[in-house]
Image (cartoon, rainbow, N blue to C red; front, top):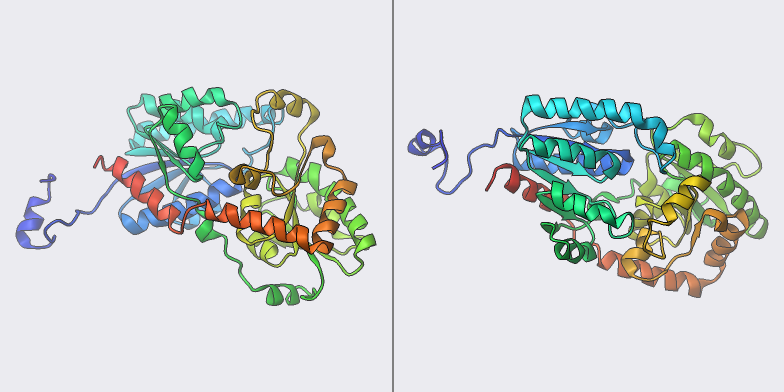
Length: 399
C-alpha cells in the first residue's frame, strides 16, 4: 500500500482500487508560440487528471493561463536560423541556469521538454544529471534535420512522445523509448467563427475569393517573408480583381513588422491571435513553413508553403538536411501535395502563379484537398493532449 493512505482506506474515504491524490511537481520547458499552445493544452489535461499537481517552468501566456507557473518567459528567445541564434546566446544561457537552479531546488518528478531542441537538449542533459526523468513531447524533427542528434535523444530521454505516426518506428529503431500519442492540433485547431460571420465582422465579403497570408510567428521570419507576400498579393489582385487578403498575425510581435501590409491599394485585413478562423475562412493560403501548415490541412485549405533564411544559415543548414521536402504536410503525406517555395524559389511571381492556379483550377484544388485529407487521416484521433498527460503522469508517479 502507498505510504500514508492506509488510514484513508480504513475510514472508507478512498474506494477500493482508487488512486490517492498526487501532490507532485513537474518542470516544463517550451519555446515559440506553437510550443506554448501545446504546453497550455497539456497543462490543462495534467491538472484535470491530477488537480494537486504543480507545473512550472519556461513557457508563455497559454501555459500560464492553463495554470502553469512561469519561472521564465520564452518570448524573446525564439528565432530561426543558426546565425540568428547567436544574438540570443546570453539570454538563453541565463534562462538555462535559472531553470536548472529551479530544478535543483524544487526537485520535480520529471522534466517535460516540448520541441525547442537548441534550448531543451542542454536543459535536459543538466536536469538528467540531477536524477530527474526527462520526457520529450513534440519531438524535434531529428529524422529530417541534424540526424546525429538522435544519439543525444537516446541519452537524455526516458520517454519520447511523438505526434506523427511514422516517427514511432524511427525512434524505436534508434533504441529510444517512444510512444505515439497523436497530434494535439486535432483538438486545438477550431475556428472561432464560421466563414460568413468571420468575414462579415471584418467588413469583408463572404462571396469573394479570400487568401490567408501567414508570415510566421518570429520577428525575423515576418521581416523576411511578409514583404514578398504583399508583393505577391499585388500580382494576384491584378489577375483576380475581387480577391481579398487576411494576414494572420501571431501575438506579441512589433507593429512595425506589419506596416508593409497595412496600407496601399490592397487594404489587407490583419487579424491577431485567431489563425484558425483565418485559415477556415480562406479559399487558399500562403504560409511560412511550420505548424501553420498542419493547421491549414486540418481546415482543408489549399496552400503554398514559403520560407526564407539568411543566406549563411541556409548554406550551413542545407548540408544537415536529409529530406527533399520541407513542409510538414508534405512530409506527413510522403509526397509533395502542396508547392514549396524555399529561399531563391520564393518570389512574388511564383507565389502569385500558384495561388491564382488554386483559385481558378478546380481540378488542382481538388487534388490538393484529397492530399490534405490523407494528411488528416495520419494525424491520429482526438485526445492527444490527454494521452500525453496520462503517459507523463505514469512516469512522474513511477507507476
